Length: 321
Image (cartoon, rainbow, N blue to C red; front, side, top):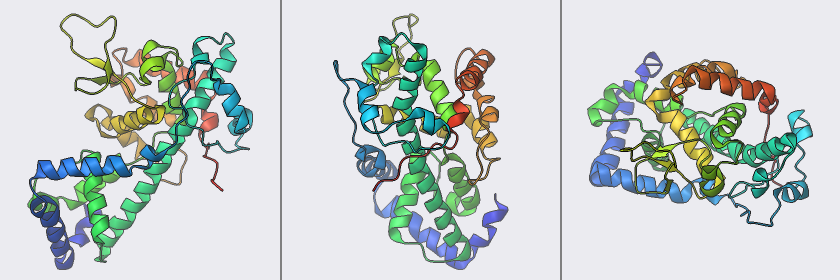
């Protein structure tokens, strides 16, 4: 990756980078303040935050809502129909009452598939934009101020560390390469399988009450639910979310940034953007996701295999009219 960007270090690119870094990290104020402002701005302009979510209360039947939007899982699995943009704020209450396991599973997948595809679509668009900016830097073309600002926000969002001006200049290839490596999708079949495993198919207390779909822990002051069997002396809580799509977004960001999933990102990088990812090499890297280690990996593989989740590899959101 370093070789790819060596040509960007000629004078014009060097001057452009210096101006960019100086503007962002010095003129705007202290680094920590700039980062805080960037995060705040990102929250307000994220496409995820603009999604209209349907609140499911008692007596509201998700199956009827899905049917009214033409949600047909059989056709979706065959890649003969697109996925309607139906976003539930919370998991259907029916999941805790339905006895038929087939219907329960299909309802669970129907509730999770639209937000997973939406988050992935946003990442794809960001990835395309990043590649265009990188190309401009390589050939010495002008990069707009809004694009510089966008790039800075993404470096913060994906937790790519830049120490100072000289660090960015000397490691521009590594830094941009690392951002490109982290800014990538998670296959729908993997996101569905892990949600099923971590949430008890959407029936756990954490999932039903707090959209805690992926077993993420938190120690901060945000929303969190205390596990009933938390060991004495432990202070972690189960991270909860206002909506399902926020939970999905947080889960994918976790896989894309945490050092425990470096191997997953490395395995994923073997696939081009125009290729369909083979999910199994990615699953094999998830030993650190659970204390169960390899047993957890096998459970995820079994969920994918038994429920034929590879049917969703080509799933796509229905185009808006």
